[in-house]
Amino acid sequence: MHAGFSSFPARLRSSRATLLPLLLALALPATAATIDDTLPAMPAPPTLGAHTMLTQSEGDGSSPAVTSGMHTQLDGSSLLVLVAGHADNDAEPTDSYLNTWKRVGDPVTYNGYGDRFNASAYIAIDAHGGKHHTVQVVKSGSPDGEITVPFVEIAHAGKLQDVAQNYPTPGVAARAANKLARAWQGVVGSPDTTSTLLTSGTVTTTGPATLVAVWLGDAYVYSMTAVPGDGFKVIDSYLHLPPNSGVQCAVAVRQVDAAGTYSVSWTGSPAQGAILWLFAFQAP
Image (cartoon, rainbow, N blue to C red; front, top):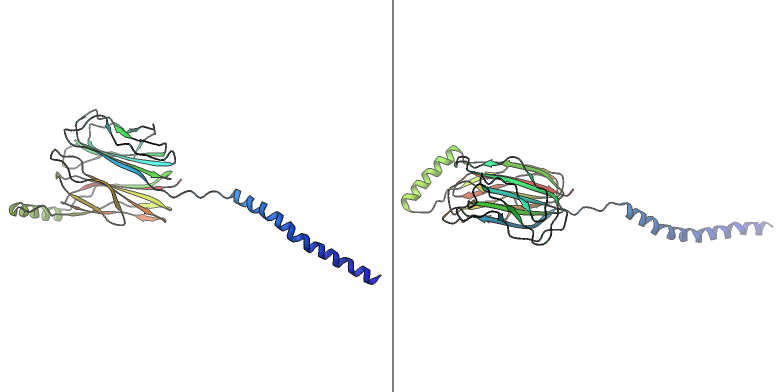
């Protein structure tokens, strides 16, 4: 009786030891699948999408001014448009996919031209897109006037996290030095080599972001440079104007992977002031 009684618990323990791994094997896949199903998908980081720039020179413009077509994402992008030129062409942009556009801040008037010229920025968040995507601006005031319209897509960007706009100009000392340099260069017949360093305002991000910087110079010159620093790269520019003039512009982009505060400095020649914007787009 003693030997038979002691052998029963041993068999029970053996059966339990065999069943336990089997039960765990059956349970684990279901548990893992349940965990995977409940984890939210990580949003894709924002990135530069399609981009173009429309330019029309003074006297050769037309209305509506229409950008070249480009292939944008079907959805999930943010769109950025700037309109720079005659202030009486004050219609808001529209696009071929009927997105809703919102102006960012107030129009900025150029120095030195009375109130005849200004620049405005517009965004469309969570926009619809597709093939041959265009933007147009109706020019009701000066249909043949000069205009520049950058059109930039920021893919996977569901919000404008921050924006900075400022209008730096050369200081008094720099203007005096530039004036003397221009006078001497005019005497000896050499090109204008004056320059300025202009810094944007700052934007703050909370994570990965696409930063878009815009430079709009204000000098009455026909050929110039505008070179960004701080890790920005130019994607579109209009810096060599025809004899009948136009609206000079440069657009640059930087991808950042982490939260932080950012700005951009532009080196330009000849010396001039510039309307500057810096936009920070992030995923929703």
